[in-house]
Amino acid sequence: MSLSLQTELKKRFPFDSPEQEAALNLLRTNDQVQIQFARHFRDFGLTPAQYNILRILRGEGQPLPILEIANRTVTVVPGITGLIDRLEQAGLVLRQRCQDDRRVVYVSLTDRANHQLAELDAPVLALHKKLMRRLAPGELAELSRLLEKVRSSLSDDP
Amino acid sequence: MSLSLQTELKKRFPFDSPEQEAALNLLRTNDQVQIQFARHFRDFGLTPAQYNILRILRGEGQPLPILEIANRTVTVVPGITGLIDRLEQAGLVLRQRCQDDRRVVYVSLTDRANHQLAELDAPVLALHKKLMRRLAPGELAELSRLLEKVRSSLSDDP
DNA sequence: TATTGATAGTTTACTTGTCAACATTTGTGT
DNA sequence: ACACAAATGTTGACAAGTAAACTATCAATA
Image 1 (cartoon, each protein chain N blue to C red):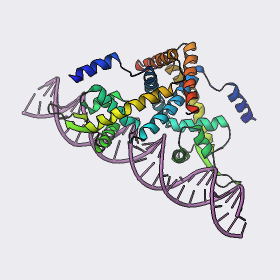
Image 2: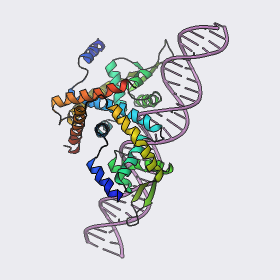
Image 3: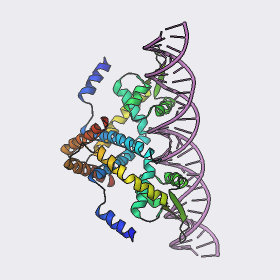
Image 4: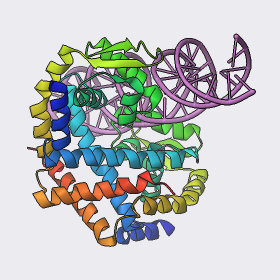
């Protein structure tokens, strides 16, 4: 039967190639990590995407145009609108139209957002350490290096 | 000003810790890779989640209960329903109630799905190789090993 | 036999990511 | 000055991930 043959092949060659194995490992590991983060932030009423935007704004230290925020996330342009909408409803950011160029909308953090971010710093750092606790310092550096190398091949297309 | 100080600090210590650096590298790299896959499958009318389910069914070689499929993906139970719905509408899978236990619903691939999967094998493998092209064989193995190590620390909680 | 509890799957509601289409504003080239 | 292109967001539609609540079936047991 072709079915048993297929099963046997599957056991002997679980991956079609080392490249595929690495790619699938990346996807699976990321899934697991994302789940941890999502649970973590949900306790504070934030989603990972929302926290990401707040971190970007704090890192910049001043208001940013909406498209600039979108550029620093993977979020595609139309998606950023609703994201900012919900953050604004939650009282965490403010929208202000630019006077010079009335097309652009600046987004800034509220005091409440800064307060909430400060509360999250320690738990987030602790979670990062927990996720990576099995890796020795050298392994951490190597993992970062390899991931950056993968990303570098995505920038210049062919 | 606190702003320029913050900017300077940000340059000198872009990450709070090596663990955080590795975790963020993982998230960013995965985002980029996911985008590549999504674009790739969209040309064939499939989403990555749909392709994943088809691959699982082909790998098994026989119909699977819906919850068994959900267990093999990161998809949470309620989400799997709509996913199977859309695959069924597209004529790629069939639902059949189990006779022995009328609660369970088996899902099987149609000929059309098998045909489409066969067409996708070569392009998918090519994409995997393209994504990882910068990594030497040893680096590929090391990346897989490190990612597995990260996942292993997520299984046993504390 | 009837109740009680567990299991399989669905429905509903909400957030996010994605694309296509659009409005508004700005800049540029006749 | 005027038309036309480009940039900045927004809207609408759909796929997907998530949690809470629900239905239907099965199993155990009183």
